[in-house]
Amino acid sequence: MSRIISLTVEDIRFPTSRELDGSDAMNPDPDYSAAYVVLRTDDGPDGHGFAFTIGRGNDVQCAAIELLAGYVVGLDAEAVCADLGGFSRSLLADSQLRWLGPEKGVIHMAIGAVVNAAWDLAAKRAGLPVWQLLSRMTPEQIVDLVDWRYLTDALTPDEALDLLRAAEPGRAGRTALLHAEGYPAYTTSPGWLGYDDAKLARLAREAVADGFGLIKLKVGADVEDDVRRLAVAREAVGPHVRIAIDANQRWSVPDAIPWLRRLAEFDPWFIEEPTSPDDVLGHAAIRRAVAPMRVATGEHVQNRVVFKQLLQAGAIDVLQLDATRVAGINENVAVLLLAAKFGIPVCPHAGGVGLCELVQHLAMFDLVAVSGSMTDRSIEYVDHLHEHFAAPVRMRGGRYLPPAEPGSGAEIHEKSRHTYRYPDGAAWQVSR
Image (cartoon, rainbow, N blue to C red; front, side, top):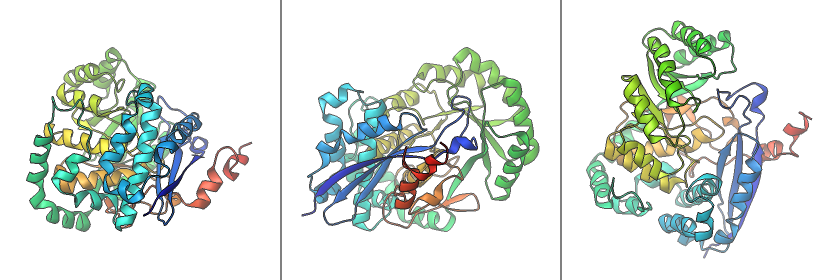
C-alpha cells in the first residue's frame, strides 16, 4: 500500500512586473506567482499542484494550503486516486474550513491546489495525461466526480449522464481529431496595458503570422487610450482577425455600457469581465445593452454556484473557467457540464504562470467527452514562463497540441523553484 507521507508548500514568485507582462487596468504591476504544493508518496511518483496569484498575498495562499496537511498526510494514495470525487468532497465537507468561505476565496483555492495535485498524482500513476484520464472515464464515473449540492435546479445527475452518454460514441473520433489538428488558441501576449503602441502592433502582427485567429487587448483605464490602442491593433491585423477585449472588472454597469459602445466600431469579439465577477444581474444588463458584442467572464468566478446563476440568467455568451480559482478539477467538471447543458462555449482563462499547462486538459476533456465541439472555442495562451515547467505546453500554428506526458502539467522544475522562491531565491536577491 502506498501512502501520502507529506504535503509541502513553496511560495514561488516570478518578477513579471519588471517588464509589465500581465499588466491590465486593475492589476498594473503583477508578479505571476504560484502557491505550490507537492503531495509526496512513499513509493513515488509525487503529485504537484498550485494556486495562482499575482504576488503579494501568495504567502497567505501558501498558509491556507498548509492547513490541509492534516487532512491528507497518511492517506492511502491508491484509495485517493481511485476515488477522486470522494477525496474532493471530503476536503469540502469540513464545517470549520467551510466557515472560512464557504466555498470561496483563499481556502477554496487551497483545496483546489491540493485536489489538482491529487489528479496529477493519479494521472502519473495511470501513465496518462489528465485529459486522457478524464476522457476515458465512464459517464457514471464522471458524474461521481461532482458535488451536486446547489446545482440540481439547473442540472441533475441524470441530465448530466444523458449529455455524457450522447457524447460517448464520438470520443475516439474527436481524440483523433485533437491529435491531428490540436485545439484552437487565442493570445493575450500582444495586449498587456503597459505595452506601448509600437510593441502592441509588432506583437499583434507576429501573433497573426504565428497562426492565431484571435488576439485580446486589455482595456478599461482610459477610454481614449482604448480607442487609440484598438485602432492600432485593428490596423495591424486587418478586418478579418478577431480582437477580444478584457476590462478585468474595471467598470460598474453604468460605466461599462457607454464605454463599450465607444469601442464597438472595432468589432470586439467579446468583452471579458466588464464588471464584478459576482454581479450576475450586472453582466446580464451589460449583455443586453451591448449586443451583438459577446460578454465573457469566469476567471474570477469563485464557485460552480455563481457559474450556474450566470448561465440561468442569460448573463454570458462565453464561459471562461480557470484551472485554479475554484476547488480543482472536480468543480471544473461540474462547470463544463453546466456549460454544455446551456449550450455556452467554454474559452478557458490561461493568463498567468502555469495556467496554460493546466487548463488545456480541461478544454480537451470537454471536446472529447462533454460538449464534443470546438466551435467558437479557444484556450487563452500567453508566451510567458513555460520554460520552467517539466511538461510545457506545445503549440503549432496557433493551436495547442495535446499533452502526451503523464500528469497535469503542473510540475515546475526544481531549479526554477529554487531560483524564484520568495523571498530568498536568487531572482529576488537581484531586485534588492
